[in-house]
Image 1 (tube, rainbow, N blue to C red):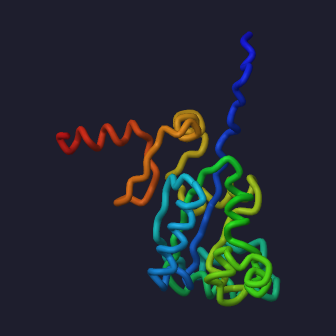
Image 2 (image 1 turned 120 degrees about the vertical axis):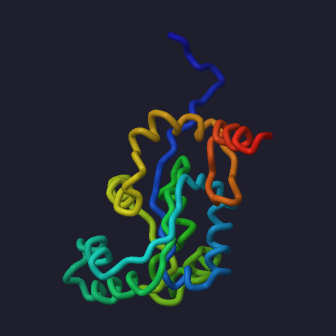
Length: 192
């Protein structure tokens, strides 16, 4: 058994759902600014997609809040226009994304975290620009809701370590981070 003297193992990457709500997606410059904040804060973007919910999807996602005073308002808002969903990875992705978003209440965000996404772009407590998983359990439930094609256990066993070791690059056309092995495949497919 070898001891890793002088080497500290980096923790596993954590995944979180990041959702850009209809109020921000309706304004391309705000959406672009939020995407850039994600990059500037060293998140790894594994996947993203645009989607438009109907009332049923919105009700299903927010079912735990049914019966609360804001439920109908949030259901209607979230089905009012397109959204952009991301799977983000980072060592402490959930906590870091929540910090970057800022407090849920926009007034509080503007006062206590003016540089946060909600402090900069939030309009009201419902139209507060973003959503993020609040725990690993929530992330494990929310990511498949938006990305049923993403297989977390497969990603952990085959791709997490190369991403953690920095073996990736940002593909500006796709607006995601890909493993360097994908870069080689892309170059070969272009005959370079």
